[in-house]
Image (tube, rainbow, N blue to C red; front, side):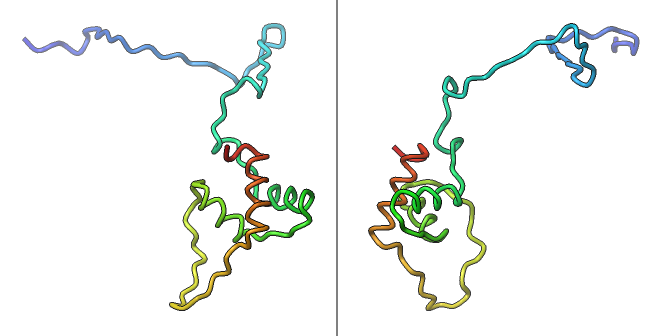
Amino acid sequence: MPPSDNRIQSSWHVETVCLLSKLNVDHHIEVELNMDELDLTSAESKATYAEIKGYVLENSGLKVTNLYIAQIKDKMGIKERVNYHVSKKEDAKVPQCPIDKEKAIIEALEHFNMID
């Protein structure tokens, strides 16, 4: 005999719904997160290109480009998004990062815990 539509079906599925839009100011919980206690991966603790440039300039006096930073990040195994600004010329010459700037960028990446 097929089940009728008015039968109650049970399941082991449990949902918790929290209503966050209405805060009772007399009853609330304060949460404090200490960032030192969190286990961040290198990808989660990324520095911006501007921060890397600033660190390199301040500590070595060298000005580096986004291209050089991207080259070194690639060399160190830090995955980046796809570069959509690739030259359409077959013989396009891409300048390579000089060794002194490479060392300064690697030092910055180490400073920002992006590499070991």
